[in-house]
Length: 338
Ligand code: AMP
Ligand code: MG
Picture 1 (cartoon, rainbow, N blue to C red):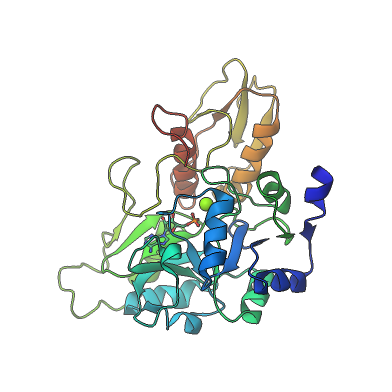
Picture 2: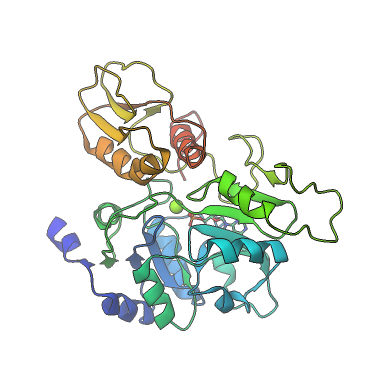
């Protein structure tokens, strides 16, 4: 079985393009995590993605484009969304925008909503592929729904039996930041690879839209930080229990309990048989890049549970804590991973 899966991993971009044009689903590297990609305008490919991932139909997919210009028949742009896209694309920013009348995105990919989530990824292999295709790619993370996101080709092969283009480890290692670009003020729907602070800084340079009078630019109150887990779900699919390893997690650990392995940040706690370091020097960006790989590693180790050292709630640390608390919620009562 493992031999069969190994043979599915390759590095030839043309082979990936060939599979996609054949309406097949292929795992592709991006700068965030590996994506399970299919032709975005092809309802059949989109349905195949949902089936392979066992993803709930109401959880919409992100559409990946080669460039901003390619999106204009599918979505309606707002000036502030355009400003953010110009600054962040290609890169790990996803924008939710209203569907245009001319949109070719199938309903199945938007969960039946009148909006779409779109992004222009920067990974060079993904860029080459997108430029060779006639339209966008729908590409959620290449894992079974609710489980850990894959940041290497080998992670994908553990969950899914699909062709996998190997582009090495993902540099950000965390999903994109999702921003609702339809309204002003904007809403951050999911913290991710670009920090809220960074996006906030970009908007400080943006000229206030003339029609909005009650929005104080220059203050930092024009971004709504995502609600604490369980209070308000702004984003369909932003389900509490998600991104879960197979073992229970204990967050903000200051000691090790019997049978626990350690997910360390900075100087490690003593007493764990298994210790995986996120960042010895306490760097949150490095920790983000290592997060899912570290959880995969602890999942495969002999420990029974995972103690996680505190991660600072600054910069991309917010996105790390978001993923960890969702992973934790998967083990709470009534919080099955989805
Ligand atoms: P992922 O699971 O990383 O592929 O990201 C997809 C996420 O994007 C979904 O779970 C939603 O939270 C969000 N999303 C996608 N499309 C929309 C949309 N039309 N409106 C709001 N959020 C969306
Ligand atoms: Mg995912």
